[in-house]
Image 1 (cartoon, rainbow, N blue to C red):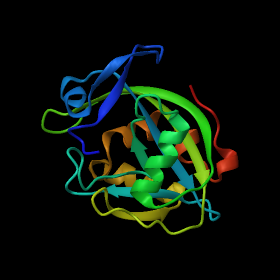
Image 2: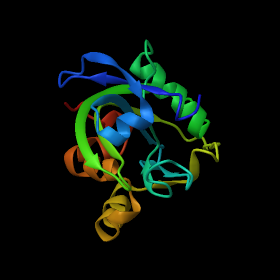
Image 3: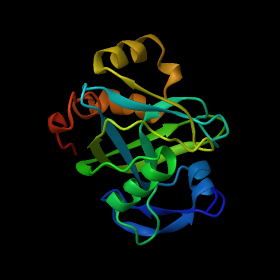
Image 4: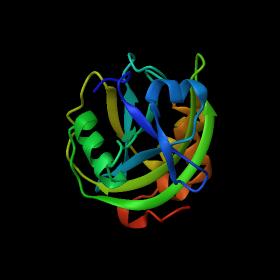
Length: 184
């Protein structure tokens, strides 16, 4: 399914579904919708970063967490997160629910995010096998190095990843999956 055919689940402020809307249109109109974000850690305590492919409809070339996306109608959030992690990064670790958060951000060229995000963590030492249509690069990075890099060059990261670093650092910078605390 391509971006133009995909629909997102519109939600109210309590994350209750209110309908479906075309994904691209929802991001142009800043409509609140459900999403998920996956944070993966390896046994060295590093977090996996994904560089979005340059061809993505927004934020191409920017660094973010391992995987982000939207569940399909009738699809459980955890199943959607596992599906997209496999599609984008070729990884299938066990995922753990870590709460949820909400944010609104203006992206680039008239694109917006207005999401209630279900958060998941996982652990793996496997090397990603990314889909080049989705992913431009990937790397493992230590939490302290990530903080320093973000402080020096925040423009290299997606707006939502910056928001996560500022609002839920205990999740993003957890040294091990066991350290990740539930938020929201």
